[in-house]
Image (cartoon, rainbow, N blue to C red; front, top):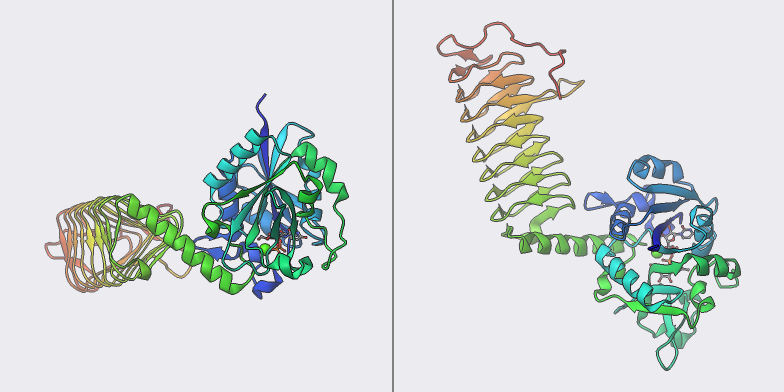
Length: 432
Ligand code: UD1
Ligand code: CA
């Protein structure tokens, strides 16, 4: 039978060095918490379970990640070290016939494909333990990889316990390990805390497995970046953004100034789309092919553009669809709105979607044309090919009939063809 893979993610540390009121693993990194990035990478291993070891923030962790597939939790009451953290998950691991991937919860740049490759090598070589390592320019603060003169992997020494000559080693422990569950059960009890920090170091497992341990060096050392301090978070954000821009560029997206694009994970962009300077694209945004976005645009969760749609110059969209070929080019807010194809949204047009208590939807039919500074008080429906005059305020429930034109405050039909009485009232069931 094929060996199972079970993932254990260590996330019970207190993260004091971040000096942040938000627990470290919840800190946002381009639209996903630090810990979420590790969970996402872990999924590439097709594990049978993902066990997160949490500490005093475990309740918040359950709330944030408890509903994600395969995720369960183990509790480490006190952060007595990474070796102690893994012990708390032992009860949930198979007795035999499984490889355990142990991942630091604060190393969000590790790629799923690197983990998959490392697991393949680990299995083929038959060793008890593999540790991922990286050759880095600045190894300070990290565990150093100690090899014999022949290059065999002997042990990991933490910086605080290292001899001066060991500190000159530039190969570091990147914080991801693959261990046969049998070896883990056999060796973990022997991990002690006789070290400068008085902690149970998971890294001592390497020495205990010496001769049956493999150091697998990452091709891209940036994947090893951990986040312990605010400056490291900024670095991680810069590196991940560059990775996202490169992926979208390879898929045919054009960034005219990637440095001024704020781009989160989980954004879809079609080929041939042009992203102008100063654009914010948040998680959950979908942009089809051959669109133009920006400059100065914020697309928030649930914003979606159809083929060839264009938004630019101080436009914000949230939970709104702009159909193929439609344009919103100046100074607009579109929230909870669905606009059809070939709609023209005039400069300054706003959906007034919030009545102080809740949000309401707006619909705009194909080929409609909204005059400059139109206010659409939701819920309201603008019919196909209808028009609004400059400055019109279309009140909630006063739907504009297809092909008709309304003007003024409140908006009234030019030819008497708007519903004089509300066709719909706020308080109904027609909101999203
Ligand atoms: C650890 C490694 C170090 C490696 C580095 C890579 C050890 C002893 N050292 O150091 O060799 O170079 O990661 O980033 O493992 N955690 C717990 N419970 C604890 C302590 C920590 O769950 O009692 C979790 C933390 O939340 C964190 C991870 O384990 O996600 C690593 O702990 P951290 O204290 O950050 O270790 P480093 O000093 O970075
Ligand atoms: Ca760390």
